[in-house]
Length: 135
Image 1 (tube, rainbow, N blue to C red):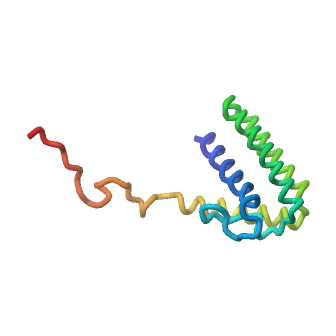
Image 2 (image 1 turned 90 degrees about the vertical axis):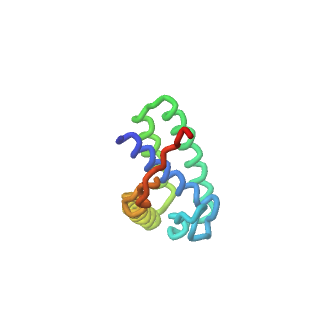
């Protein structure tokens, strides 16, 4: 279960890291997701470096997933975070970390209970599933 959560968290981070390449000056990324770099204020050079860093990390993550190597996945994530710390200045990094923390907090609140705790089947609507009759 922890591995699934770790992978899911990593994929979310990757998705948001990719966002500045797709929409650097937009506040919303692809699919309505918030672009964490839009509020950080990165320039074109930083955008390019982050894109290269992300591409490298994605390759490392793919290899780690194929090998089912959790330590390698963690190392790839750490390398990405360390790389960001070298690309962004202290103020930008702090803003990015604050935005990501808020996004993680919001994601956790939305993902619990589905549609007000009800499942998607007929029983959620108060009805019973009909059985097929042989006639």
